Image 1 (tube, rainbow, N blue to C red):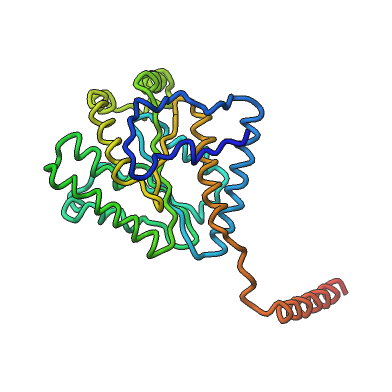
Image 2: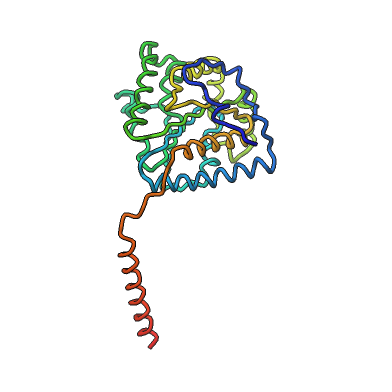
Length: 289
């Protein structure tokens, strides 16, 4: 199935969207079957090869931003989609409630050090967008403060793109209220998931509509050609993983990366290799004698 995931799921730059028009159950016609599993496996293998090329070329970077309401599946997306990636070239950063030191600085101060260097992938599990989401919903700052941050965010992401050749992909994992509650139930019923339970999960549900409105403005104000947002229907975890992996892989393929040439004279290195091999053979012969 030749689905153009990026085209279908992008929050088009400059346009307002209504999340109630995006079905979190949608799978773009895909079904959970052998064909889907094979496609996902092939894409994850492709990501491994593309990350190796990114690391070797060392001339650009990739930033992946994951946002979503509680239990949307940010951790699960990282665990499944990036399962084949070499940890040496990939780093995950989580941004929770700011510390007192972080609050003493501008809101981007704690984020910038985690931006990816050339040749690497950085994944933000929650991000700088919390400062126009949580801060807005819970009125932690006046409107004139958080509303000005959209432009600061756009400028920051533009700096990463132009200043360090960083490609930016931003994913909103879209689930329904019913699916969220079902996942909360699974956390209660499964001892291996009990540790994820938080009282705040239920308190935050009361702000569902406020978060929806805040996210819609985020998409309208910060989805750009150089840093697009994608709304990923995530009630079905398997489709979430498929869609995110396909978009990441397609984006990396479009970078036009090339394997760098050798940094040394191969003829000289071959000569040194053969000399070392001859010395080793003589050494082994003396040892046996």
